[in-house]
Structure formats: structure tokens, C-alpha cells
Image 1 (spheres, one colour):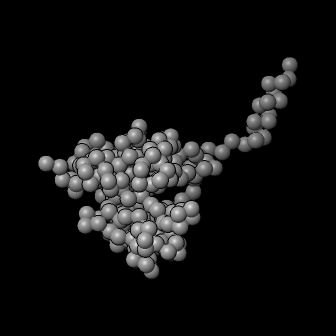
Image 2: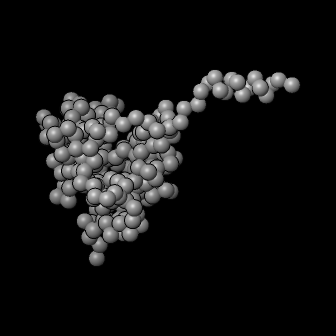
Image 3: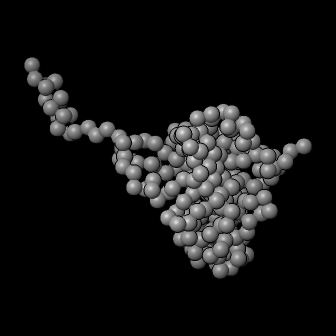
Length: 216
């Protein structure tokens, strides 16, 4: 018999190829009314083509729900944070501003906050979320923890994120490189200070190469 809590959602940023198949699949979900609730972020657009998919992390203590003055955002018993309920949402944008991961979207056409709800209509019935079902590189994975640990022996799943002095625990896991010591959390603010490692190509070098090729 299928038990929903046997499967978990994992994001592996190193595997994202920027194809946007997840974005297209998410926009086809009937509950989203044609709006994609997942988007891709460029890690360092000036230096690299590397992208990372961004979905709702489904926090254990969701800030979006805590700041909602209308009590429109609910969390299910199995830890999924739902989109705002239309009859209660007042389109105040508090949740949009409060989310540390920048996930909630205010859809002005509907005057409603909408976000990833982990395809609850699918996952609660034992199916994969739309995005994970079409990801060709495995950057988005939905399944048992034991299986992802077997498939990715060089990575470890982490579901704690440090924002300064605050630690945010989430239902969704991020795959981090496995080091000498097991990663306890991802320090988000520390990562923001990292510099790009891409190689710079001097325009002077390019112009010199072009001139040399034109000369007899």
C-alpha cells in the first residue's frame, strides 16, 4: 500500500540544465490556471549558464502563513504548505515579502497569492509532481530517501537553511556535495558573498585575434 510520507522531494541544483521543462509542465497543471509555480534562477548570469529550479520549500514553520493577516495560508498534516485560499486572501503581499526563499507570487489578475503546493492533488494520490515527472536530468526528484541516497552517493540531502541567526527547516531537501563532515545546513547568507569562478575573456584579446586573421 502506498504511503505518501515514504516519498520526499529533492532538488539537485548541479543537475539543472535550464531546459525549463519543469516550468512548462507546471503551467499545464489544472489547479494553477495556466500559471507556472516554479521558475529558474541563474546562479551567476555574467559568468555561467548554470541555473537552479526554485519551488516552495514547504517550511516546517512557514513564515508566509505566520504573517498572513487573513489566515488564508494553511499547512496540511503531512507538511505541505498550500496556496492562499481565494475566499480569505486579501492580496496584501505580506507573504510575498516575508518568504526567505522568494517563492509566493501575487497574481494580480486574480488578486490572489499562488505558489507551489507540491502538486498536492497528485502527490497525495501517490503520483510525482508535474515538474519532477518531466525533468530530464534528475535535478528534481520525488521518491524514497533511500533511493536518492543510492543514486547520488556523492551528495547528501539537506533540509535546514541558515539565514543569519535564523534556521529554517523545510520539507523539501536540497542535495549538497558530500564532504568530510556531513552537511548540517546550507548557510544562505554566506553563499551570497561567494564570487563567480567563471573565466573572463578580454575583448582586447578577441580584437587582436580578429586583426591577425585579416592580415596577409
